[in-house]
Image 1: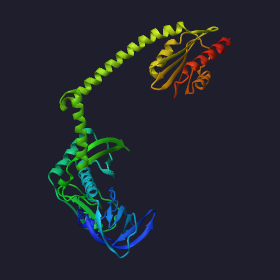
Image 2: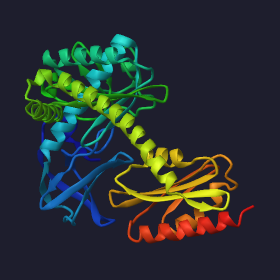
Image 3: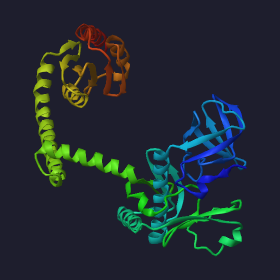
Image 4: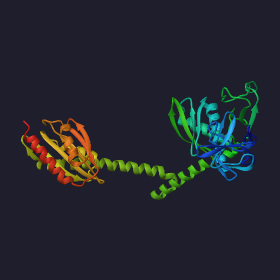
Length: 403
């Protein structure tokens, strides 16, 4: 069985190992060594990567107690080769995982919230708790976890040969059915739980812990957090964004929130004013369109092509044109697309769903509706004017023949 050097020293990143077997696997090869510094995925933590001699280690896994290194080309059995872990990746994962232990302990200690799920990805990490926690509780637990970081507490892994030996330990979480020896990771004066993964030497190596998000999940709460360099990169990006906004508003960073709020309020007021003006303008346009309506027996047909009117306003305008016994078809060229609305007023004999297929076919678009209103879009405005005249003629003929 492979000797697990990462269990003895989480910071050892290089070793010389003898190749015990090399078996083709997929597009690579599975290598078994006499000893390894490469951690296989487990405990929520991804595996190490790196190099074995000239081969690249793509993934490491454990099966039936043996550790298999998936590499990109074959290695000679019996040969002793140097192995080197991608230390930047390993240390980042250790920062997140040790940080997770402190966060989980803090939530448990303060609010009796139990960790029921942990996922450590290469760009984020999450913890699932078994109960809802508030924003204020998250901030309190985050602060406690960081206070453990600042104390630079020792982190120690100890193996126990039987479950009886650990029965009296104050474990936060005890995974059932573990095969001895059982590995316990302890943060002095704080967390203690079973874990198979490499961890920081001290909590100070974590750097900092920052909870970036929280959401309801299966009756509890899922938090997303960053530790160490990940947290630094996040803060740097947010700081730079805040700086850019401050320059844009010609204010101090501390005043950006107020400046954005004022801009939002001003924009809201302008949108309200725009809606009121558009409503008034729609009234004038509707009067003009109705006056130019085509007569179709007892009914009237409004068919107009406009431009620059969005879908919401076009709908309001079409409905404003839908006087008694009037059918209105309005088209608008908007951002390279053709929007159209078909609306009918009181006393109109047909459901618009009966007319919409002809409109879609003539305009090359897709849309639908029923009753007195239908809407659609076409990917191109080419030929819209000619198509509109064809539709107008069709409507006039059909309605003129209607009793």
